[in-house]
Length: 270
Image (cartoon, rainbow, N blue to C red; front, side, top):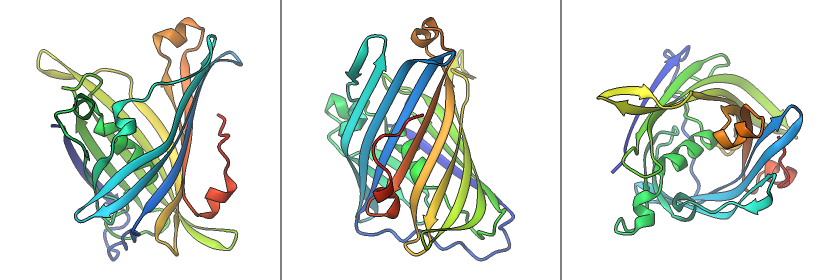
């Protein structure tokens, strides 16, 4: 069993009326593109690309998340090859999702007697959803308002799991009009920290990873229509041996059937 806890704080919006929540449809589909690349000087030594589609469908008091169209590939000195999928890439998940983007639980929707179900990392799905579906402020959405959302997770008992937290700081950026359609702009910065336990004390297991992003919320649909983010992580030992010290990454997610869906092709490059 994995554990999750959430908290939210808001500045500049305490006196305003409660923010209207998202209007969830009967099916919510997003397309996601993600790439990362490590360079030695200006020469790429590793390029990773990933594409997937996620679908969220209401099922009573939770949403069923299904994934499709998943492709992972990496190009390095050995050439181009397909990256094997992990258990969380192939399973469905039960997601508890509130109207203000509260993510209060993500669990594999499968038989826990199966090894793949036991080892699937729900936190990977959780953190991906937080990029796509921003947490809304509890009240007020005036330009300049800020709020903070904290998600803690604990899957340290799993083979590839860890224990940590993601703290996301949001800032309302006003409105934008694209091709005659109005969007609410939300800027955000996220910091992920993973811990390990040594003699009972919780110590950082790796350097904190920061990323920054932007989400456009369609004012007519009252749904996130487009998100983009970027960041950098320390290079692995293998990549450091090739002469790179860090790996840059960026991604985007867009609502299926939206204008962004028709604008973007699957050729995202860093």
